[in-house]
Each structure stands twice: as C-alpha cells, then as structure tokens.
Length: 332
Length: 253
Ligand SMILES: Nc1ncnc2c1ncn2[C@@H]1O[C@H](COP(=O)(O)OP(=O)(O)OP(=O)(O)O)[C@@H](O)[C@H]1O
Ligand SMILES: [Mg+2]
Image: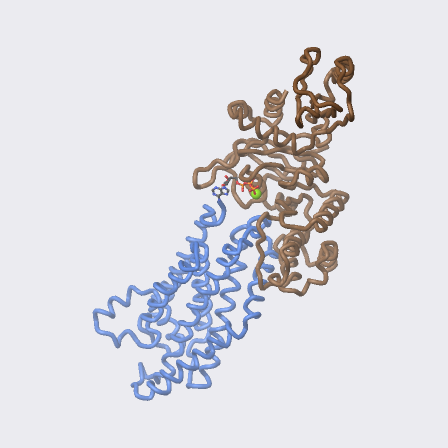
C-alpha cells in the first residue's frame, strides 16, 4: 500500500502560544478508513485543519498524493474534501446552489448529474430548492457532506460526521462511507463514538494532547491490546479466597458471589485450566462461567489513563511507533 | 489561475445581490430621487449656477460618487466579512484557490454592483435635470476606478473587522464624513480659505472633482491631480491586499 497522506514532524502553535500539535507523524494509506480518536481538545480538528489549509503548520511537512500542502497547495487541495465539525452554511442559500458553489470553488466544471447523484445519495434531493435555514440539523450536516463530495475528492476528511445525528442517519452515514471506500476514496474521520470507529474504521489512531499515542489496525489492536475477563459465578458466596487460590490473580466481586479473572489471549498460557482445576479442588462450586472481550473503549480509556500518568514517557518519543511502544510497556 | 473558482465566487456574490434587488437597486434610486427633489428642485432653484452649471446638474457627479463609494465599501466589506462570520470561509481556505482569486471574485462582484448602481443613478438623473457629459470615456474611467478602489478598500475593512461593530464603524466614522465633505454637493471654492486648504487633504475631493470634470470640463483641482489621487489610492489598497496575501493576516491562523 502506498500512503496518500504523509505527515511528518507536524507541530502547530496557535497565535495565543498554545501548542495544539506536538510533533505528529502519520502515514495514511490510499483507500483506507482511519479513525482519529481522542478526547475534547486533543488536537483532532487542528490536525485536520492544518492538512486542509485552514490553519498553517508551524513546523513539519504534510503531503497529499505527493503534493506538498504549502508548495503545491493546489495539487494537494484538489484531492481533498472536508466536512467540518461545526455547521457553517449560509442560511439564505438554497441547497442546490450551496453544493454547486463548492464544486465551482474547487475548479471543477459544472456537472449537474454528479450533484444530483450526491444529493440523492444523501437523501437531500427533495430538499434541493429549500433554503438552508429551513433544514434540520442533521440535514444541514448532510449538506456539508454533499458539499465535500461535490468535487469528487480522493481524500475525505470527516470531522465528527455523526455528532448530533440520529441512529438511523448514523447508519446511513456509515453506508455512505462504505460506498465511498468502495470507490477508492480514502477517509479520515474523527469521532468520540468508539462504536463508530469500531464499526467502520480499518485503522485507529488515538490522539491526546497534541500527540498520536497509537496507530494500529483495528483488528490487531483489538486482538493484541484486547484483554479478556473470565467471570466465575459461585453457588455459595465467599468472603475470602482459600490459600490454594492465592497465586491466581483473582478479584472478589458482587458480595463474594462472583470471581473475576483477567487474562491476555495472546499470553503463553491463559492460566484458565489451572485456575478451574484449583477452584474445584478448593471445593468452590460454580454456577456459571462467562468471558468478555474488552472493547476499543476499554483500550482507549486505558491508553489515555496511561498517557496521563506518564507524560514524560510520551514526550521523549516522537514517532508514533515509538510512543506506541511506550504505551504498550505502560499497559503490560 | 483557478478561473472557475473566481467565477463561482463572483457569481455567488452577484446572486446575493439579485436576491435582494429591492434593497440593492431600488433603495439607491429612491434616495437619489429624493436628493434631486430636495437639492435640485427645492433648494437648487434658489442657488446660483456653479461654474455655469445649474445646481441640480452640478450635484449629479457628486451624488453618483457618494453612492458608488459607500455602496462599494459596504458591499465588499459585507461580502467577505459574512463568510468569516458564518464560518463558511473554511471552504475558501481549503479550496485550491489563492488569495488573489478570492480578491478578484469578491472585489469584482462588489465593483460590478456599485457600477450598476452608479449607472442607474446617472440614468435616473436624466429624468430630473439636464446633464451633459463632456468626456464620456474619462467619465467611465473615473467611475470604474472608483468602483474598483473603494471595493478594494471595503474588502480590506471586511478582512480586518472582527465584529459587526467594527464593520460599520469605519464606513460610518471615516468614509461617510470624507465623502460628504468631499465636495459632492458644493464646489470647495465656496468654502472659506482655511477649509479649502483642509479639504485638499481629503482624497475624495480629488475623485469627485475629476469625475465632475469629465461631465462639465471643470473641477476644483486640475484633472491630472485627480488621476494621480485615484491611482495612488488604488495602489495603496492593492499594496495592503498584497501584504494580507503574504502574511495571511486575520484569515489563516
Ligand atoms: N484558534 C485557536 N486558538 C488557540 N487555541 C486553539 C484554537 N483552536 C483550538 N485551540 C486549542 O487547541 C487544542 C486542540 O483543539 P482541537 O479543536 O484541535 O481539539 P479536538 O481534538 O478537535 O477537540 P473536540 O473533540 O472537542 O473537537 C484545544 O486545547 C483548543 O483549545
Ligand atoms: Mg474537533
């Protein structure tokens, strides 16, 4: 795979002196969907804005499709569609005009058939002659998406596309993303919804305090970072554990009714066999057994907690791979 | 050059103008007609001719200039301030367009609008007074340059303004007084000598005078001075635009 967006050493210090990006390196592959996950103020919007030309970078380089965003901004921006986080539309304008305007602004010849197709895909066709102010919030967001798609971008940035959108529309949006991917469009989206990243992304980048903490294939991430938890429900509650079980890292929960055991699926041995044998040897009778896979959400929360605990570990590393190692050591 | 983008911005701005035709076209016509009634018919009948021109006709070039200047500034400043205010400027910043193209699109549209308003006022004036145009080409040239330079000025104000108050303050506090004291309704030779001297520091005097010269063949200052003034003013605005272009001032963080 070749990377279509290549970011190296990117920093951004706002006029106020605030350093919103502290050295970001990221390679985005052509045709993939990558989710940028991070808490409020992590720098997601700043990163996207800088790539798209809304803010200028302080240091570092970014190229899109091999075009440097500063020296060859036309080449780079030709390829980019942006759906901003904030809804920004002229209220008196009509949907059709708003979307056609963007196409013109990107220097593309008029193509009514394409605009029609985009509007239909986003279920906006029957609203094409409505004024923007007469639309609901979710529709306005779709107009923003229509604008971004009006000029046939190869790389699409979606800054929280599903914020304030109902469940049905969110599914629609995911389908749209899926269809675009099928057309070969590279998609970078930010989101607070971990289920969203889990549902549609190929890769996940976790960003916090202006640094990328981790970039990982979603599946690998889930597998490698994912821990499982065994939940043993007892018939008779226990107050304390018998001596013979002390070397197992067990936790008593729910008033002694439940024992919890966390293990790594990738470890040499999970220790489950021994545990179960020791449990029955100790005479504890089990009512039920269940296991639970940790979700991206758990991983995410872990990462952020570790990141906050070890700021010096993160600050000595610059590359995403290096900080990933630092983080992994932190969680191991 | 991304001419399609320039066209898109120009077309969009003109669309806004035509959506509000009542406000953008009829109101200048109405207010000019009122000026003619008040100054031309009511007061003008008691005024002596100025430089051999009836007072009603004398004020025509000044009235056109007055409207063109204020309209150019307000159209251009609002035109670029609005996307900033609404946040839709993100599109201009992320599109493959440079600042020059944005300037051509927005200033071009504002200049076109003010030119249209100037032309309409001129035509309206024919219904009220006898107007002759001694140097039609020069007249068009002055009008065009004024539309252009004041649209550039308005654009700069729109970029500079960070709120609506600022957007209206400069036109109100600077441009309106300069324009009113710029000899639209009088010849500065009517003023006491001190004020004549002071007036010579008002750039608008040169523009109005030059424009009036193109109608009646006489002006308050030699026409060469007028040409120089408008050239300097346009050049100054272009320089500021260039500087904004270089630094991204108030546009790109
Ligand atoms: N124009 C600005 N001037 C100064 N600081 C800014 C500016 N824009 C953003 N910041 C700061 O930069 C940091 C990152 O902001 P950014 O908008 O990139 O966060 P985000 O990850 O998109 O957050 P959210 O999830 O809330 O959208 C924040 O601390 C914010 O206060
Ligand atoms: Mg954001």
